[in-house]
Amino acid sequence: MSASDGTRTASSPDYAGANTHAFGPGRHLRSRAKVLPEHARGHNRALVLQTLYHAGAMSRADLSRETGLTRVTISDLVAEFIADGIVVEMGVRETVGPGKPPILIDIDRVGHQIVGIDLSGPRDFVGAVLSLDGEVLERREVPRPDTADGDAVYAATLELARTLVGSATQPVLGVGLGTPGVVRPDGYVISSPNLGWSNLPLEAKLAVDLDLPVLVRNDANAAVLAEYTFGEAKADFMLIKIGRGVGAGLITGSQPLVGSRFAAGEIGHVVVGTDGGPRCACGKEGCLEAWLSVSRLSASIDAAPDSRDEILRDAGTRMAIGIAPIVAALDLSEVVLSGPAELLDGILIESAIATLHARTLEGVFEDVQIRLTRQNDIVLRGAAVMVLSSQLGVS
Image 1 (cartoon, rainbow, N blue to C red):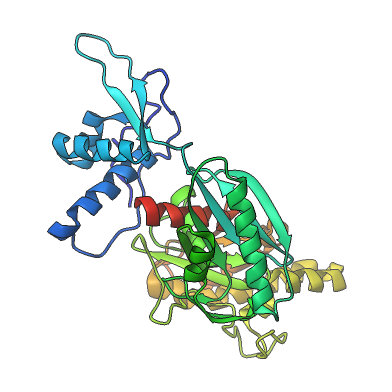
Image 2 (cartoon, one colour):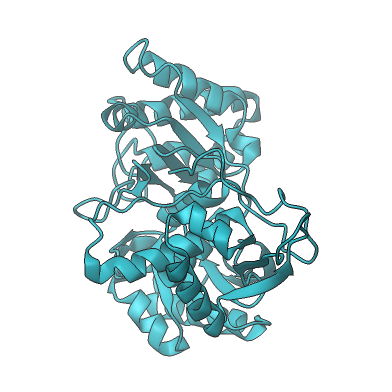
């Protein structure tokens, strides 16, 4: 949900020594819960940090006006944040006229770092040390082990995490990890066949082994958070991550959609069409993943380069057949794709848009677009959002 157009940004005042980075109008994942009196302080803490994170440096008086909280409450919270090393004073803002110039405050964007890990790659596990602004500062990769051995996969994950934590140059706020599979909100991996995991308390296990806060989510659910916080997405959209597998994350009404089985967005093994199709790794024929995964598209094009356009056009059509009911049922504004542009951009997206519009109600969904994300390292950046949301209430 966006703040009003009048939100003050760090670049609007002319001042020396302030952090000029800002994300623009604040966007946060909307909570459906009523704020009870006993939860008010936590709500206010998150509101203040959310405002500073997106709007940038401002004075305490500015912060009071932006949040609607009293100056006494703001002063109390800011003092607490400064004592905890979360917020810093940036210096004074230049003013014209009488009166004491206000002191600007901001989140200490360089005082902590985040470790993000992406286990969804076809050949390597990728990790990074990131700034609080989602910037990749240090990147590491380790070869993907034999996925039939879940213990070896965990050992490789833990080694990568420890290496990244050791590479951080500031205290680590937390570790975020995106993994293929069905993952509960508490980071318990119900099933991840690609990694040889079943009923694994991955979040709790890593937290003990690293002695740090750890957040684990499905990789597509991590990616959708990055698009929402750092990207151009609207309040109701689906992000489809296309790589070794195919999965989706959804935001509806500015709220992540998880589902009663924690499997919302598991579209890769939905059969698209009644005409059969390539055999999927799951054993069925014609699954969306069997049509759309990067490995399948690349192999098909390598085997028949003269049929490249036809292969991509067919894949785009199949994808739209699979997502049209989802777009209509949830009234989504757009569909965002994350994957290799050389395969997805152009013919595949054009075919998908045409099919989507043809298979949804005319005059209602014709403005729904399908586009590529502009973000690199989207799962790693989504992992950063997970940590920011958990530790600071920022999204």
